[in-house]
Length: 128
Image 1 (tube, rainbow, N blue to C red):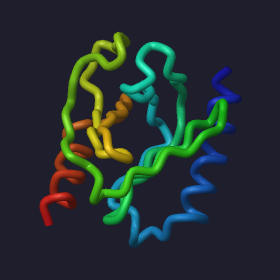
Image 2: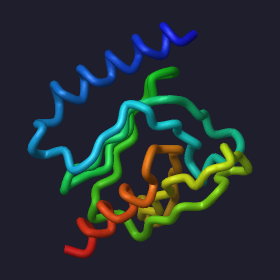
Image 3: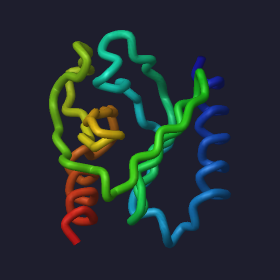
């Protein structure tokens, strides 16, 4: 399984490098563990993938089943670091992003290295 994960991380890394110029990436990780969408609750599909923050958007690509999630920075309403999300936990703080959708609100969360650093970077962008 380690080889499969390594192959997916390499593919995700190449995708990020091809689609996001290095100078545009504020932060990125190909080791993000997605906890799903708050609106889908426990039915939300979790999974590993790539998380990229630019000054314009927060972008996530789940590796399997493949899916992209894009949140414009202008739609982000808050960032938190809870210990659980959608009833799941990895016994560490998560990065949770709250955002506006078409007439509503939602949130997504990830287990990432340095959730405080991600939170600070996102808050810095949305406050500027």
